[in-house]
Amino acid sequence: MLATLGRIIWVPIAFVLAALACSFVIFTLGLERLTHYAEGFNDPYMTWQGGVELAAGAVLLAQAFTLLPAIFLVLVGEIARIQSVYYYVVCGGLAAVSAPLTVRLSASGLTEVPAVAVWQVFATGGFIGGFIYWMLAGRKT
Image 1: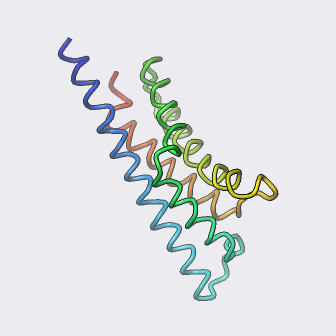
Image 2 (image 1 turned 180 degrees about the horizontal axis):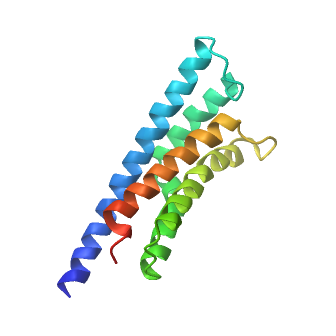
Image 3 (image 1 turned 90 degrees about the vertical axis):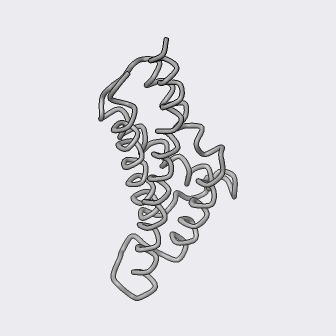
């Protein structure tokens, strides 16, 4: 009984810490990509449009409804008692990549896909967030 209560308290705390780590990686990696493009470094995957998409995605990520896919995947993992690092890392990446798609769908319909740099930045952040969650709460059920 006490272990279940502790789990109910620890899982949301671990999720928030993982979401903060994901946001930090997306912000810093996106800023680094945008700075390289602005300074004239040859980054074939980054454009100004990609920078705007990164900023819009970061704003959207700060809103609560972009966390819904991640919350759903964490609930599935907790209910099914999945302890695999692969599950949490891949699901974290998929949940984070859904944010640019949500921005694109809400803005203008899916007329064109986001830039490659946007996919890379958000997937990397999601992978880190999934790994952090697994380290804190996912490996112990």
